[in-house]
Image 1 (cartoon, one colour):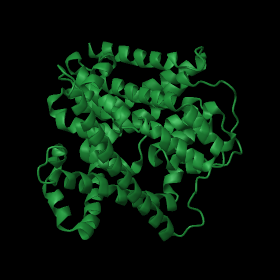
Image 2: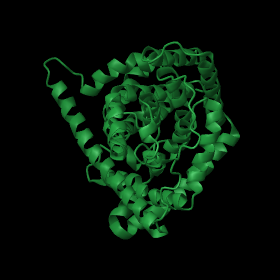
Image 3: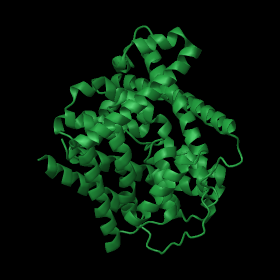
Image 4: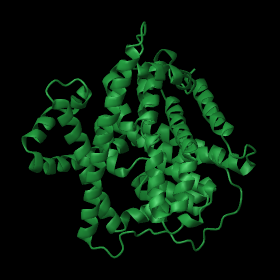
Length: 418
């Protein structure tokens, strides 16, 4: 039954992409690339979920991030002193009381254990960028993906860069080529950015979700976006990117400490933005829930209603019917707010869900696919090239739609193995 619903989920997701496609007559070559990418998604999901080697690799990676988070805690301890100690003593389960604390401990745990490490991870990324290690990795993956996806090098490079840099920073390396991008190609670049997460916040996700699901989501989203854009945004013309300049060394001309300082400051900005978004969105959801409860005879909250709207979608991708409303509510919460708000809600109820639903919801929540990201991406691109930013703003809703389908596809693939 699980495999059957998995197949239904894949076909359903592809159908949703096809009905919004700019060209519904896909070539044989496109379908060939799609099947190869699907096979790779299934392979990596099986590798990380069902093999000793995959589990060992994820365990090693999680341990490495735990060490990095420990170093981040030392920096936080110096600045915040006893407040940092209080959050550390609460233990790994402290985040579970994010909305139930009576003494402020929950805020300490989330802020110090989840947000503060972003600053340190950003510093590590700055070092890797300055030493050219990270640009070399991104370029290598981009070259490989041109052969697998059948897409031009810029799109292949951007997919790899988005997986590491996130939805704002990734366009800096493409600032010289943005004026040459058609609307269709800009859609692909923006969808890749929205379907990814930034390496700087991976450590934060590791503290809230199981590391294996974070790693699986990153890999499957990276492959899945090519599948969705092949269907929703196909372009057949031969594109020659030879000689097009991509800035793979944006730190050129800066000293080591200039780069390090810039990345640390950028990490601090991310922390403030995430904290502000959480405060605003959680407060608004609380207000809406209360307003819906004021309706005479109503016992449904705003999130309950969202859950019922998304319930059929959750069921069709393989989530059990008796948990589909809860999963649908979490999916909708992520779409209209952001991934951190939805994960916070998920953490409070995860233990009440089946293992399959936990896995599928976890990977669905790992991306930037939400309405707020439209403004972030359009603004980032517009700051580099005004006309390209306007293009992104015009297809904003379709952008969220496509990126959300990537998350649906990732969740469906993971459901095969539970």
